[in-house]
Length: 155
Image 1 (tube, helix red, strand yellow):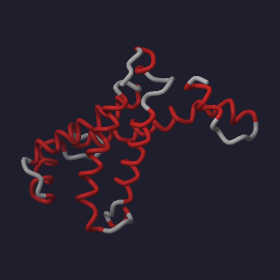
Image 2 (cartoon, helix red, strand yellow):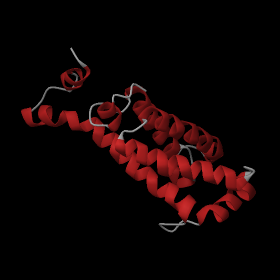
Image 3 (cartoon, one colour):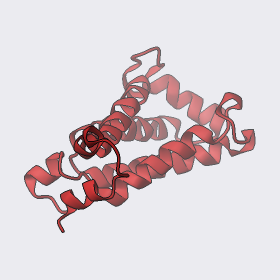
Image 4 (cartoon, one colour):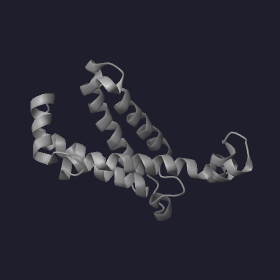
């Protein structure tokens, strides 16, 4: 059984429409994850969407989070979120992009852990969820609806 039919075979049996559409479930998760990460990177890198841009975000990273040099860490976070998110959307270098998101979320977890679990208190809930989504994407790769598959990339 090849990878594509295996994905459909593992879907929970139900109405035929769900079985036919189940092949879209993973690309929906991968693409949505990328699209939701990109604006966070744009906030850090470009100051879009109400963000503060690289210099101010770097200052916050250095002064409030103790991450120095702040501009470098803000740049790295912004690059992972924006370009890593774009890579997830396209399914291009999907596993390296997902790994980058996982590392970023590991750092975010270390920053948020003193605030407990719930995101409403600045806790770990949100970065934990993103890290686990990235882990799932890392394990599966780009899959059939990706540039990785189209280009024959086996990473």
